[in-house]
Image (cartoon, rainbow, N blue to C red):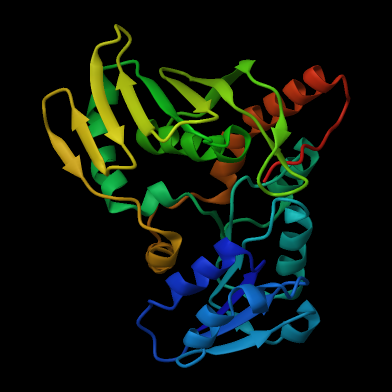
Length: 315
């Protein structure tokens, strides 16, 4: 088995740890990252994995033109995401490709993603392959058939610009509906995120679907991370406490579980892609989920900053 990881930040390392849990005799990890800081940062983890797996450091895709990859993971920042994918598709042989969210930073890049041969490209939305969320989905599907739902996600430092696409996909996963309107009127001011050179914001972000509303509320100082679901009459439907791993429904049914760390779940993601699990998000769906959000965020930035940018630095 050959796995190529492009971008060796924290998430790239966790993907490797997850893939190392696959039960295959021979696994080779190829690492591509111009910044060699990971050699110091993850030395202990990599040295441990080297006892069982082979590691190869790759600086040029040309060196890999004859290597078949079972999976390529792009875990870089969203910057240059399209260029990286174009290089992969033109220079490398791979069965599957996984990219992280957000998928890009401009509408031009989004349109260029549409032009790619993207049947083998998937977006990493962990809720889709989390057993806990799958059980919750089965309950929500039945509820959503006869209700207009308001789904509110609230918590500290949610990362609205970076992570909103995850919750949009969650609503699509539950209801099979795409966004039709994005309201940014109650967002706060843009601020630099934890990652230097990138930006995010707090406040209230409201996304409308045909029959449902998703409301994301990010507080600067809060420890909670809760999803509340009500019907159109504001009757309680469900409460999902993500940090505690418990979902409680209107009929008193409780579903307990947890969201696994990436280091414990990339193996599950890969296995479900291989088995052609239709739950896993393909790039073409992620593009449709993301377009209105990206457009709204760029407009919001320009209105607040009195600028006319076409690419927004979120990741």
